[in-house]
Length: 539
Image 1 (tube, rainbow, N blue to C red):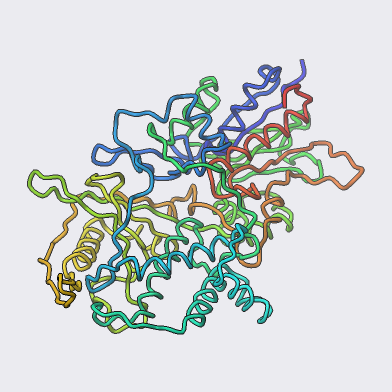
Image 2: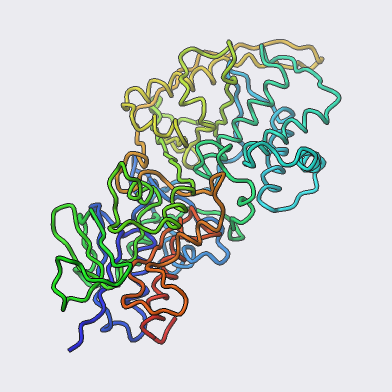
């Protein structure tokens, strides 16, 4: 009796479980393979992790279905009725309504200040993403780029700043604003622009937009249609994918220490010759498992750490240099979420606005001394659905890592101080009926928070961050390189043990990287690669 090929999937996140689900459910493959999914953590789902906070369902990881037209995630959610729920859930009414934009010092900014800058920013990003807009400002930025042989370091950040400069150059009439204290119009516009940049950082996970490649930005694809959250939680998708697998296939708490493979097809020196499985997976607890094929779905952050000499090599022998070069060039950032429960004020439900926060630029003397740098780089604080007393703020890059080190007390203290200072000094200009101006001083409104829940994706050794992006110096080609299986056989030769290591995960998809559906597609791709290799009918 010939041994069945053994396939081991490393990682029980979206990519790994999709691959396992496809391999197990494909016609004719049921008795063809021995299948295992080994997961280092004590839960399935990877960067999908639905939780609860103050009675509401919240997402600690993946949150949105990015466009419902053609999304496999949306299709599954519909099939399993995950889009209906009795319990309130995060963003159940979509994106927050008209936000209030408040600048440091307690100045509420009206649309005449915010809208032109928001429109400019949107047009510039649309242009960067290849959705052509023929706004004059974008034309100015394009002209500027061509005249100067490109812009800065070829990053989205450099392009955006050039666009802002072109916008200021094109404006003759710099009419000053009244009623905003020490803020000049130009300073306010720059601060609003910075706030929009900070939001963009959380979308891309690039800690700094000057590290986000401009050329590759237009390769990223979105699905059409609205963006929604999943009422029953993102984890319902994961549970559905795992539900077909027999008991024992998924093994939790199996953290991989080292992966031995055979680029040349020679045998392990410490392995009996008749055991022809070419891959040996060593676990942290000292046990090991042999396999014919492994599908590696760990995060790009874990691959970066596992291919760097200082932190111990994951693969033995090491991966070929074209592979490690792609791994080190691509960007991988940290995005964290901070949930806060508002202190209930007596018995009335708090009405907290969806707040956009505009802070003085770093050089300014006018900064509030008690607002630290890490909160100045976050853009918003909003109820997770209309009238919820749970608020959510997003953090990226250095401040996301800083957030992980702070105690709940420190966080409550700083956020309360910041929000109170923004909401409590409305030196807003009031226009009376006859057109004369006066100021009304609002009451000191102390905002207090009682509970905190924050994510820690950066320091979690199983993830070491959140999702990938194309860094300056890298390109979409690197995602394709990430997806190539090993060993790579020279043309015209047949390797004795083909397809030993296959790679899946969001960082292996050229146009849908950084998303759960990108991870899903990559899992299908690698499962199909093996099904084709074994001539299983259905692909």
